[in-house]
Amino acid sequence: MDYVIIDHPDRTAYYLAAIAICAVAAIVATVRGWRRGVYVLKPLTTLLILLLAWHRPSAQPFYEPLVMAGLLFSLFGDVFLMLPKDRFVAGLVAFLVAHLLYTGAFTDGWTALPATWWVIVPSVAYAAVLLRILLPHVPRALKAAVIVYAAALLVMAWQAAERGAAGLPGGVLAAAGGVLFVASDSALALDRFRRPFPGAQPLVLATYWAAQTLIALSIR
Image 1 (cartoon, rainbow, N blue to C red):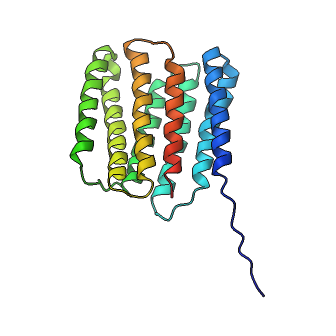
Image 2 (cartoon, rainbow, N blue to C red):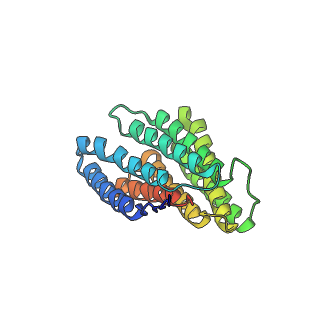
Image 3 (cartoon, one colour):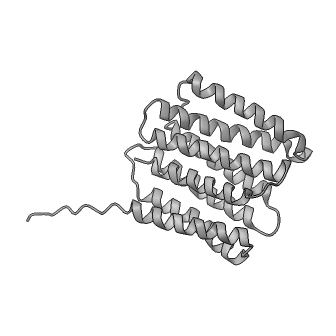
């Protein structure tokens, strides 16, 4: 008996279109204060990105499961941060775990990649400037948590950039995702702790979902 092997179609384009539509709708709902819409659309957008990652199987043993686990904890963080009662610390912890999982993926199992000076120097300089701006405005009870979170975020972005610099599979997409994640969290922190600014919410959400989508696409 002859067996016919049928290739499954690549559904990446469909997922990207659904993610884009859902993200735009979630941003509109956020800006207009449609709370019910936010409750549905915000986690749904991240869930669609998780499904995109699930449909991109990788030959690397660590990469796909760690990225998917990072997206799952990001989904938890989304839910915590959108609840009416302030769950900022719970959201911070969820995203902290997500960054640790992403770092594990980018380093193929938490084995640090060799440091490249033109990657690490800007990373350290940016971290120093950001914390110098933020920390005087962060409540004393949150200072340690914010420092730990910022360190995990910037290590994740640094290792993503090192992956790109080393030419590893998905490295360029991972590096772009890491940079956008830093941009999103920086805007969120500045808006929350230093001074609210117009357009903060659309900027935070757009860069956040772009970052997550690029990280999902980095799975090979």
